[in-house]
Image 1 (cartoon, rainbow, N blue to C red):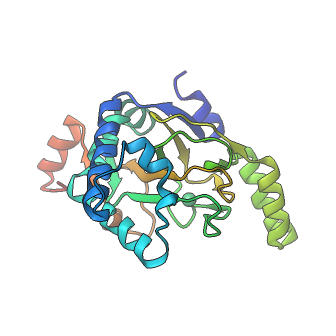
Image 2 (tube, rainbow, N blue to C red):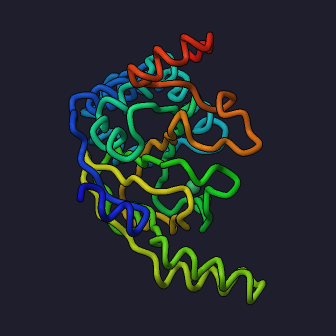
Length: 252
Ligand SMILES: [Fe+2]
């Protein structure tokens, strides 16, 4: 069965079915960076991304730079490019009626930066009927990456938190049982929002650049939140198109 590992463990490393679309995203970011930083001597996207920390961009300057890039990604409809790069996986996991998060997040994790994502779980704050696609724009290894606990270990970690009521036990268990994946550019980590995950300090001498974006089925339970506040329709099956039209529901 395809995506057997995802169904059992809640995550899987998947290869882009159309890497050209990922290259397009890399080039959009690289061109915008040259423009924003006013530097014409940047060699290549890979060299620029991995050695980004050598530019010494910190605090507000770094945040403004990141927000500029995110704005450009929105203007260029990067969500569609990500979907096209991983279309096979997303259709395989969700089906033909797909909602995508309205904005795509970009994380730039520089070596030895003390500000990094701690151990957490996206659901239940977000719906458990969603997937996260974590898309590295550089090669990922050791602490340059992120860690994840499979569904069984995530459940145990949550039980520890409930029983011991002290975060340190939960953190210790999570860090000891976490799995790090070395992921080469072109592949991504897709995971269920119910899994516990986080990062350690990036101790490698390269900067990590990753995009993350959530997808869900148009027909997934939406709980108390209006799904169209944070998500938009990306794709609809022919049946949904005609059926919703007959009900005078206009989602696109
Ligand atoms: Fe998260």
